[in-house]
Amino acid sequence: MANNPVWLLFTEFLKLGFTSFGGPLVHVAIFRQHFVERKAWFNESQFAQWMLLTQFIPGPSSSQLGFLIGYQRAGWWGALAAFIGFTFPSALLMGLFAYGLLGAGLFGWQQDLTALLPGLVVLAAALMIQASIGLSKPLVTRHVGLIGLIAISALVLWLTTSAWAIIGWLGVMAFLGWLHSLRPVLSFNALQAATEPALRQPSNNQAWWLIGGFSLLLLGFVLLASTSKSINLLASLYQAGALVWGGGQVVLPYLYVDLVETGQVDEQTFVAGFALAQAVPGPMFSFAAYLGMLMGGTWLALLALVCFFLPGLLLIIAVLPFYQAIINRPALQAGLLFMQAGLVGLFIAVLIYPILPMALSQGWQSGALLLLNLLWLLALRQSFFWLIPFNLMFAAFWL
Picture 1 (cartoon, rainbow, N blue to C red):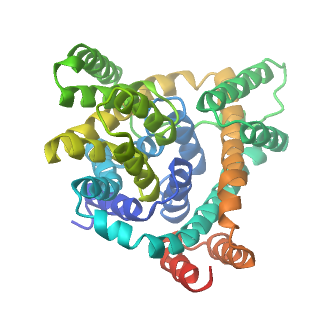
Picture 2 (picture 1 turned 90 degrees about the vertical axis):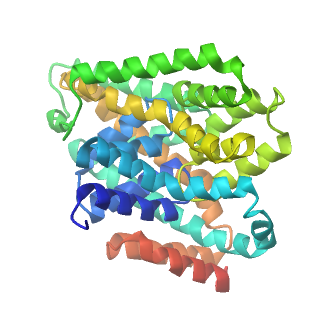
């Protein structure tokens, strides 16, 4: 079984599901370090394209990226294994918290657990720095001028907190790339190498079936939402996963309006789960397990998870044939190249605030820990897994 690609994907993503703290951008950095740098399953160009694609599809971006990695590696079963492995730890913790099994223990240990968190924040900062450098290299080798676009993007995105502003800025970058492609002689002489074919993709008919299934489910939930409290929860989760960009930080406030302000979920209960969703490893969309367990028990928690994640997972595979068909055009290649520069700028903007200030909040000790982490990752090129126990012990004694 150890050589089975599906089982291998499950075990690799299960490890990441237990250790990936920090939100979607940190998850992407972890995926890159693990699957591009350490495992060498994909190259930088392929990973950057798939990462970029997740920014334009509604739903949980890091889970979509993991699902896409699994699909490219071992088809639909690989995608499912990657999704289950990455989601299971956080979904289990959220469900148990809602059930009350972890309540007393969690709050009883709250002070001790809080003392360890700075170590994980430092690791998140180190991984973000490593990802920013790694994603910048292939762009800068094509043209040194992209450094300027990365810097401008970082400044613009640092000044905004809106998910729509991020999407809008990436659209601006795509437009600038298109304008650049209209020049008689392209200075980006390696532009033709800016895209890599997908290793695996559905046929056009399969893609249309996926889009059709996505649309029918959306319509069905809209029509049936008022039939019961449980169906309304599933409808709210599916609609949020289908229509909202920006990941958990944007989707959870949307659910607050849809569920709390309508009186379906108590405000204090919702906020407590929202806080825990940001503290556990793995995707914040596992918050669905918490809501489902509260409102209907184990089976509703499982259905809630499926409904929350399903639309984004269907779409990320469905767009592959069309995505690959259009990016062979020089103008769109140029747009993608410029958008990749914008996405690296987003990494740097999030690193500047809030990740780096939080990582360095404990004074020179946290700065020393960050340097040690960067030495391990960049100079020694070792896996981040060993840094988790090291950083936790460092935080326990010195932070």
